[in-house]
Image (cartoon, rainbow, N blue to C red; front, side, top):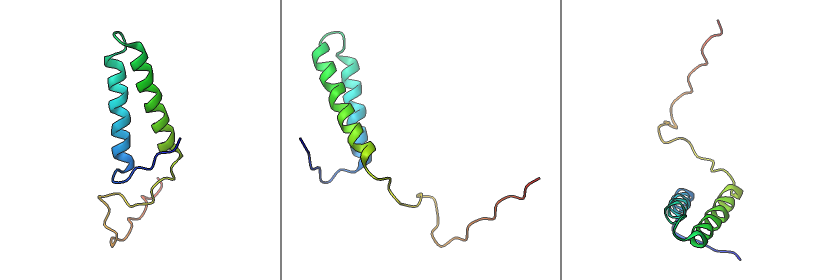
Length: 75
C-alpha cells in the first residue's frame, strides 16, 4: 500500500513516528496488540522516511552570501 501525504514535511512525519512510539510504550502493558501495531506503523513510516533522498539545503544559520572561512592552519 502507498500513501501520498501533502502538507507535511519529513520533520512532521518524524514527529508522528515519535508519537506512535510514545503511544506504543504507554499501552504496552495494558494492550500489547495495540502497542505492537503502533510500533509497526512507526517502523513503516520511519523506513519510508529513510528511503527519501537527503535534502540539499543550507543550514538555517548560514549566510549564502558569506565567504567561507579559511580552514585553521595545521599545527
